[in-house]
Image 1 (tube, rainbow, N blue to C red):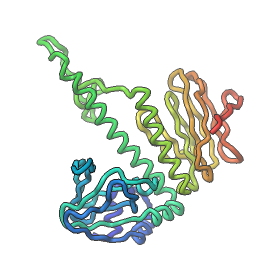
Image 2 (cartoon, helix red, strand yellow; image 1 turned 120 degrees about the vertical axis):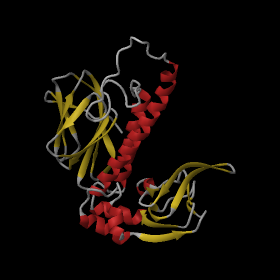
Image 3 (cartoon, rainbow, N blue to C red; image 1 turned 135 degrees about the horizontal axis):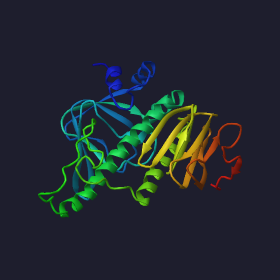
Length: 306
């Protein structure tokens, strides 16, 4: 399997134009590591994204003199993705547990590719959101497990469990049979903070040159004919729009919403809210020709000071 074929199978690059994947393959560096050799070290600055061609690695946290294993990865999996967008020290060590060969996409080369092909940056944000959503689902399952264990078992006259839907899970219960755990305000703020951090980094390195992003808190939806992607984690959503377009914000239930708008050339978002909105009402977000403008019933809403 050549580099282009391998990269095309990765979540980061699936769905991208073959020309873009070819440019990524051209920028890749092949590196070999001996058994027990550290590829990435906790606390050091990361070089970029690694893709395993053959072999296996262990992701571990170093706590004093101890190595605490977190995960094991093998061929066609990637690691150190955040090094692409956040030039920060790495939070874990990655060590080869057998002879291993990787592809390295350095941060500098990857930034240049994203500046030329901002579709890559959108794909990265979507994948990071999918991973954050998976992590939150696992946390919710862990939180619900003690309550499920403490609850009494069903009696002989208890109603039958609802039949699974066509997707394989019940509409009335979570996939593990317990009621889903709703995300509290703290979790929503944490999710929103992470999403804002991703996009701030992407705009700082000028990787979103043709797109604007509107990050919305509940209970609203963003609707636009110029939307190219809507990225959701729980009640927080990021609508990726073609730069200079407009979006209608519709309420699904009464309550306040917040809005953070990123635009090309502005690494810091323009912030609005909380804005109260009732079902049947909507706000209009207009982009381009100066700063973002938000109106409700034709009246302008002032942004918050950064």
